Length: 183
Length: 118
Image (tube, rainbow over all chains, first blue to last red; front, side, top):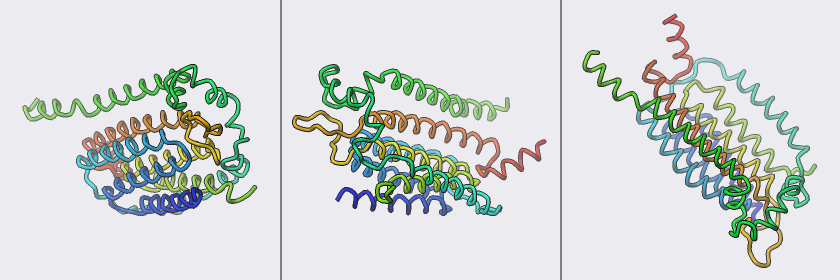
């Protein structure tokens, strides 16, 4: 049953991604991107990644769409038709995709507990985090404690992005007022 | 190799390439950012697929459950999702400024205007 949902969700995702690649309306593109995020959140839930699923649904489908729509209100939603030919990008994409698919043949089979990524440090997290950190959610334990520095780095990145956005957009109003006063 | 066992990986690559195509084939900068977002979410799916254990359960410790999915990719992707939104916000802010400076968000028109200005 899970694999059926998996197949269907992936089919939907391909349809949405195709619609984004072909469509001309940016507002529709923003909405389709929200749909893409929400469908992928469903997929994450099927693959037992509950924390990732609700973060993707809230942040990916929610915040990203709001940001896109807000930006489109300043930019406008029409996209001009392309004048150059699509042949070169298509060729690049096909060659890259084919080599990547060739690369996936060496990946371990989907869902096998004996896969290499499931060994090394992961069993220790699963066995010890309950007593060491004291909360049942292993993802939260790893995120906030074992790999706390990663999360700190993430916060620094968000801070830097926030400062960047404020510097890029914050000065606009003052600039415009100065222009109106003829300075 | 068996095809069904690699279904997820192959579809992820297809989605990734659709995002990549949107980035390189479209001139509109907002569309490029959306394509980049699709590429990014496909990478997330690849990671989560690798961490999936069939028959396993969500990595929240429960009495009587012994097999869990791999929590480590989940942690990495949680970080990546939030960073992805930060980069999207910064990219959109840049596009808004470009629109103010050039009056357009189409890459080739921007290039023409830059050339005209010398």
